[in-house]
Image (cartoon, helix red, strand yellow):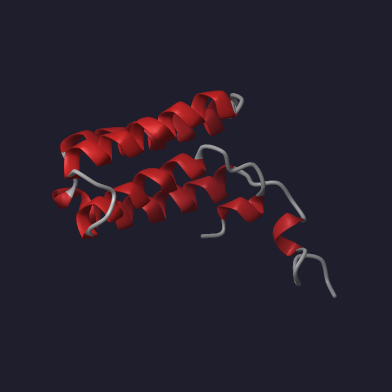
Length: 116
């Protein structure tokens, strides 16, 4: 098979800025549909995480380590827990999914991680 096709095509090269731009653009479009239903703090956190990830790629900074992401993940879950008095339910689940999706993007290292 030619290069760039088949199961190994996603891992054949490391992600570049254009890959990140496509993923962030898609996420912005999806989040824009839900932002009017999000709690204000969730919208702010999602925006900050997206900007932070963009700046990491632009300036070639290191991705945040687990000891940075783990407390952010726990704080996000606790924030949803207090905002909605639980983690279950349509609104709480959608906001938690949006936050976790942005946090997952903070640890995306390979091109395969960019496939949603």
